[in-house]
Length: 292
Image (cartoon, rainbow, N blue to C red; front, side, top):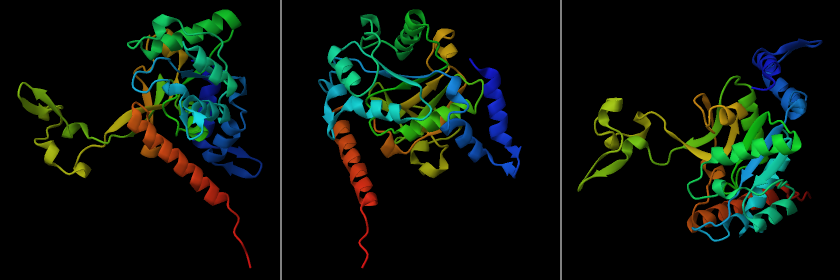
């Protein structure tokens, strides 16, 4: 990975602290010193790629549909631009309307995504590889870290992005970091159809548990699901391994209400309600208290 020696040195400082004139400095302080003030990442190109394809079938025009007063994609653009660890924000899209809205909210759209990377079956690795190589070939831009975001997670914040990048940086040699939430349906309690009958989706012998579906959830190993809110990826994972995930993957746990993924109309309504709830909480928190 680019900047590996500096990365390793920072990792050591973060883990053990350093001695300054006034004594020992704990690692949380160093995290703020080197990350939040950008002393470590100032020479790194940390590129956010927001993937926003046109032609949504579940919700027409989904990525630019208004939600709590803004186009859906605007929430992700603003979160990315507000992140202290991010140095550039681009949108990869095949849709001119999405491109125009993205530019209005401050994102770059340096190219239009080729059609082969905008089909229903296209994988993320192809469009990310295209973006990295296009910027390299047309702008001589070298990507040190990729942060993959999707517009369908409007409750993910700048703080979540910064935390994910920081966690990636303190884990040298990983292929990627993904955000996860506790699985709402435990995989050991799920079933599949086998002819006219159902059987456990996860074979009982795999964990040595019979009738796991009847066991209390607390007795089962914790299960998590990827929520796609933030993926932080080593460019080598994409360019050399042909994957946007890799094998050495770190997980960062998020709260479920921050990780809503909009796939259908019901998801859209839930996300809008949560955004309004968050706005109302902020207004109440800022409201001055009358004295006397």
